[in-house]
Image (cartoon, rainbow, N blue to C red; front, side, top):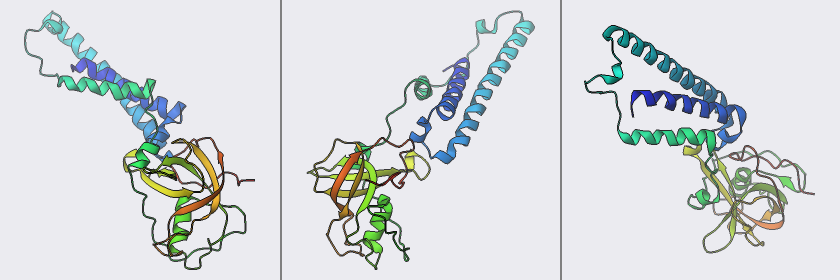
Length: 250
């Protein structure tokens, strides 16, 4: 890759970052929402760097042509400003930011990842009397496996996520959570009982009660639900969080 090709690469990458972060929500497939300002700043800096690089190269070329009386492009010396040919592949991710967004992480990724262990929690607030009770998958798992008061026992809950078929049968309601970006994504799953597996990556709101397996309030308790009802929902704009359902089931 010659130095003259580095300029469009910088410009394309900068434009791609700005397009993704300013005019679309596609950046949420790669990083957390809070990193949007950094993407915008990075895109602007790369764009300015590319334009400055182009201006400096043009100035240097004009000066050399004036000093030597010939076009420097016809110099018989060796050009040591080239990089390996494989560097041309850097244009592919730059162009993808502008013209093609890779699919978001989903059931395929989740099926090859274990469910993330929930953090230890010693105290739990009293649960609201709402029925069904909106919960995140993480909160449900934590309550089932750590709440010694057994407050979740017999309670109808509602959770949202996407379907991940399980090898050998059955399915999990799943969330993929970004700590920072897609590279450090973690998966939380709750196994579903009592209803056929929907197509992979189908987003659902699910209501049900804890599926009795293991001792409630201990690590032996299964993060699982006996399903009473499901409804399809639209994929959230920011899908890589473990948020509460927007509205309770009717």
